Image (cartoon, rainbow, N blue to C red):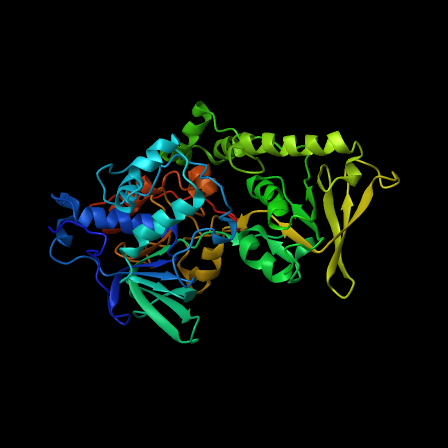
Amino acid sequence: MRAPSPEHSSLEPTDPEALHDLVCVGFGPASLAIAVALEDTLTASTLPAQFSHLRDEPPKVAFLERQPHFSWHEGMLLPDAKMQINFIKDLATLRNPRSEFTFLNYLHHQGRLVHFTNLGTFFPLRLEYQDYMRWCAERFRKVAHYGQEVLEILPEDNGIHSKVEVFKVTSRERASGQIRTWRARHVVVAVGGKPKLPDVFLGNHSRVVHSSQYLKALPSVLHDREGHYRLVVIGGGQSAAEIFNDLHTRYPNCHSSLVIKGGALKPSDDSPFVNEIFDPDQVDEMFQRPRERRAAAIEAHRDTNYGVVRLELLEHLYAKMYEQRLREPDERRWKHRIIAGRKVSKLSSSSGAKKLRMVLQNEELSISDPDFEMVLEADAVIVATGYERNAHEYFLRPATQLMPKRPRGQTNYWWTVGRNYRVQMDPRKVSSAAGVWLQGCNENTHGLSDTLLSILATRGGEMVESLFGRGAPDIPGGEQMTNGH
């Protein structure tokens, strides 16, 4: 078989009207990892036996992506921001260190391998890592359809007594509004997270910006780099801390506040023993646990990923706060301050909608305490409160009749997945040769690594095996998934 090159992929474009073997909804890191694993399989010097049927005819594949080009957290690609995972956990190395798609091979092709080595780090800049993923994605440009917003996934009607053999994916071309239908035996949903805002911030106010849009949206609201703005960041995790640290470089004259619910910013635990929970082989162990034990394990290790900040940044922020304390003992007079133990209870507009007024409550105090509430005014608020990962529930609404029979007395029932990420559907209604898979929304069944980059290389290989391998096990036993996971 021909060797891969940066200019060509074994996957060729398919007429949208034709039957596809696979349509991936979303073309971010998760789908890209599947594409990379599939390309590595098709270009291997010896094709594994379970893929021998692909030797003469590569699968017909399409990737549908809402954005106009490959993009990964563009709104948070801050200067000097580094990856939080080792580059060895790239799109290929842990599955196949000889792959053309490793981060080291990317550096080699860019002529920076030696220079990167001189940095003495395992953690590249986020800007560089996005460029690495774009370099990989470019290989699949013939089968990646950008600007396609998927609307729904529904079974193709084969008659009342026939099993579903094909799924139809409906998309809208964002530039023209044209509706298209893609037919596929297999569909993978890998759209990432949707920005999550607390209820108090809902209302489409232009001066409330989610952290995912920080670099894109904030300049459109605050035009004057030298302006004396008052800016507020909400959240106690890595993104909130990074934005709080970045604001004064973007707007040197601003006054900024970081509002957190807890009593202090907390460090993330990335010590080597704890980091083993992100090892690929931990997914099996996590999935096999009883539901209660699995939930307890995930909760016990939330400080590896949620509401925590890398120690290096914490120490930097503390030093900045200390410098202000040297000049001014009263924190209320500082230009940049951290307001701990507070929650935003009310939000309103003032001054012709050009300013926001927030009421912050300290829930540990009684209502009669004079410090129970405080008021902040801001020219803009950046909300770093994470993401929801339930888009599949929306896409699959037209297919709910394919759900397995509900357990007696269970009313809150959502789509479930097996260990191989395949959505559990009624086998009386759906052929074993067709199905839907979910990526990046299975944390409560597959563990904390599910939404992260750490296991993409290995998981991509597992997905190719499940989707295209002859004799691949169709592991049953899905767990209940709650809306939002």
